[in-house]
Length: 299
Image (cartoon, rainbow, N blue to C red; front, top):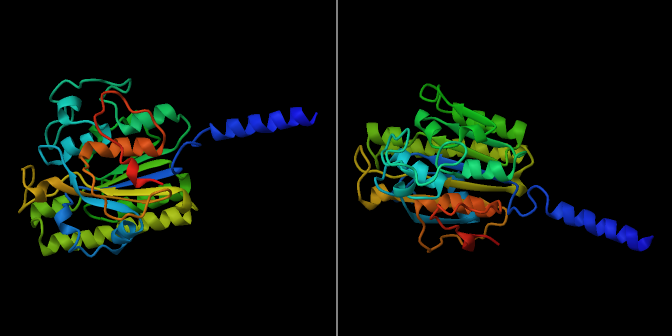
């Protein structure tokens, strides 16, 4: 009788340890993207929330974009774990691949972290909130529970962070992407590395703070990893070139099971972001991905 009971307990523990999320480094990943945020600006920027995440976790200011150093091609590379030669998105505003994708998932586009996570975890909660309509073409939208384009963000800049905070408090997402269209817009209008650019970074930091607070309010903080990053930087009022101000972007990671290094020296590319998220969730990455997970950042 005792032996039978022991076998039942062992079996139950085995099932629990191999169930949903058991191999994860954290139960929640919040990916926050700031379009057009160059690494050159970090030291000068007044961003206390972001710098607290940097100090409590790990970061690099040397993550490089793919070429051209502009939006769609780099968000695609970030999400898809591969370079434009493979996923096929090659321009700043690509809505579909200009080159035939080397592989297409059952969602109809090159496999990305969104579909990969969904297929492995059908019951997980996944969200995607963004300010630029071009982001809709770079993810498997059908794999995501909640998708929102913040249409009023130009008139009410705080609407995106408020929507993200509400979603976090109500739905406790396992994977959430929140992509802001600034400081890119300010970079095009007033210029990169200008007072207006730094003022916008200061404002964006308060929005990131609202997202962090929502995670706390939802009781998720101890089980969450935050990633704050960017697609490209810029010079003057443009981007897309081969200067380091355009190509070097921050990658900041902080939270459960993340080492406090803080600055890591290993090389990182844009297409290494998706494999790093996949590593957090114990996912097998597609053979067509060329990115590498930053395994050294985790306990």
